[in-house]
Length: 238
Image 1: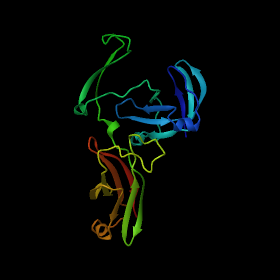
Image 2: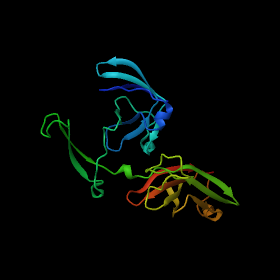
Image 3: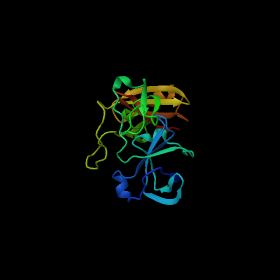
Image 4: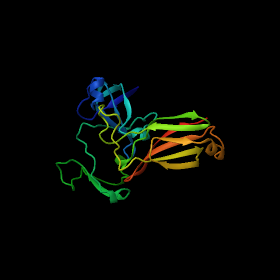
């Protein structure tokens, strides 16, 4: 995959090896500029293709998309005019108290070396939902038949300290392990359970009560005490 004709207002981009990228190099955020409209991606190759009036332009190749749980915001194609920010450590996450989540707040944004009353500053109002607390979607969601029942299994992910390959599993990252599982018929929830393990038996009797499994969708979300149900993994049955 590639991202074509990325313009850079300042600085420069450089190619990195796959090992360096997996270790955290070349991270960008691409989005529409709204608080929740950002995808985090990484790239291995940055090819300089032009020097224009608005800075150098690059082709980025070897993309890793939907990083850091941002697959929920991942667009099929980001349109021309989308914002791209190189996450080189300069940008820092806002420290917002839990009781301010979802509340509109006023911000003055401008150069750090100038006063807040400088004409270069802009005034914006935003409400943040605390997406950094949202549990990542589970992975490897699958179903296997077992004597008429369906065993639904998955593997959890973590937002915290999940980069090491030394352990048998990633750290939990939440106060306790808990999942919201739903069986959907279109947009209608036909069954909903909350469980504390990474598997669930959808019995033949339950399937019959719900009208079978043809075209039904299983949706699994990890639950956070501070955020609620996180991003969903989905599997179509039947």
